[in-house]
Length: 312
Ligand code: RIB
Image (cartoon, rainbow, N blue to C red; front, side):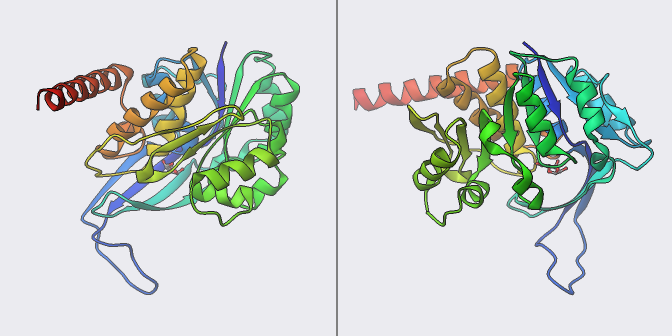
């Protein structure tokens, strides 16, 4: 079984700021860094670092060598990626002292993903393979339809939310991985809390297994039969950029490897906790040894705490 991710590749221009610039305000950044990013690239790297076999497809510009190198260094297969004449996509990111961010993306070469290219890429894949998509490239609705026609398992992270999503037939999607804000928008509900969102999405898209990330409240898994929550692992956040992508990649790698959903969610939560403690989207994504080590340490500490409570 192979995983194909048709997704964005961005150069992230990241500015550390004391506070976000307001309308009409000019601020001085404390630090500046350029990192590899894009929801697509981040998720491919997370998948690969989690141990999955992943092929990335998408478009870069003549300046995209750094993006291809980062993917290849992580073990992602890059031979399907096209080079276009337009510059690579990029993101302008402000990160505040709490590690939260504000992101503006410029699509660039990511908007050159055409139906013909998608058709060509899909000839290499078939039933049993997984197609992963986010909403930062052109022709996502077409990719969803064609992936489904091919009998692939379609996994969709509908991020960022924009008008393109209205053309996506989400009834064809097998896994929807999204945050609470995205969930509410797609469900068309103001309901507070995950349950209301999950219930509405379940009615609208009964085929889809739902994974909802809830920020500091953790995450929620719902597949029509079971619904459960995974707490976050505490971490000192320096940069939350790419944390959701790390979660998605690790969760999907776990499912592809045949892990139980609860185990895949726990791995994903630990991987994203590690990622927020580091700077940059792709560079912050841990490898699976680090995640296993931290989880083992966390389990040991929890056992010790339980033991101490018994003695008291
Ligand atoms: O999810 C984080 C990513 O969103 C960044 O790497 C940036 O490129 C934008 O696509």
